[in-house]
Amino acid sequence: MTNAGRNNVYRAVVLTALVFFAAILSSCEKLLERDNKPGSSEYVFDELWNIINERYALFSTKTVNWAAVYQLYKPRVKSNTSPDDLFKICSDMLGELQDGHITLQSATRTFTYENFFRLFPVNFNYNNVKKYYLKDQFNTSGPFVYKVEQGIGYLYYSSFANDYTRDELDSVFKEMVNSRGIILDVRSNTGGKSLNVNRLVEKFIDARRLLKYELIKNGPGPNEFDEPRPFYLTPSANRYDKPVVVLTNRACFSACNDFVLYMSLLPQVSIVGDQTGGGGSVPANYILSNGWLLQYSATMTLSPDMQSVEGGISPDYKVNISPIDEANGLDPIIERAFSLIR
Image (cartoon, one colour):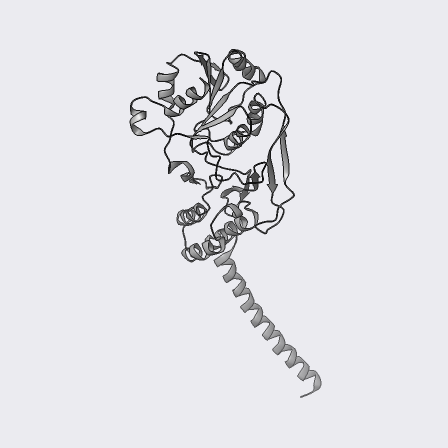
């Protein structure tokens, strides 16, 4: 055989081998794509776990081992796991963080961790408050419900998500100006907007004060944060300087948790009721490859003495409402507040 013939045979063998291996590689790629492609059950599970692993800000406040959680839940996910089953597995895994800011939402289902308040006494019955304490006679201004009775003001604010104007807030305090003190009820207020928190606190704050620090994640490690960012507020005009009692329960969460933190730092303020529910962070959102929406805690809030407030704010006076009290229309938390102001 001539050299040219040998070269032709060699080229043919190499070409055949390349085609063969290309076919194998193509088959492997298709296999991998089929089993773990974006949007597949296994891919989505890993994607979700990794987002929390790299971006979640509160691992230092939790007792959970996130790597061990992966080993516990990943074997439950198969290539043929249905979307409903995957949603349940992912929800159970996220529940290990015990964080009320954690949310997972599909087109048909929503998971939110709620045991931060559901495992504890409610300690609030607004119908009883209206009937037996306000006697169904009260004023409203924007989202505020208020009344002055025997020289003591009562102010109820159901949610910091409910906006108000400065005029609406001022009209409340015009009625309270001659009171001996105010009972400020934020029980079962699950949060809302920081602007609404700040405007209300400014009515009570006595001087420019450091109220918290905010830590913002800046890397994938569990303790990779920017330098703590201080947060201050200053008094508003015509501030209220008499005693204030803030009423709390476990459903005081997120922005309401911040509100109770700020108020607890003021010298004329007492906190009565149960520990708040926490939520010491600002949440962020991420859209997973299958279209599900994941919300997670992206920052960490610290008190002025650099302590995390994720676990909630403890009251100065811990008071519970028993089932018998509630059945009889009694609210020992309000009763204690009245006694502190009288």
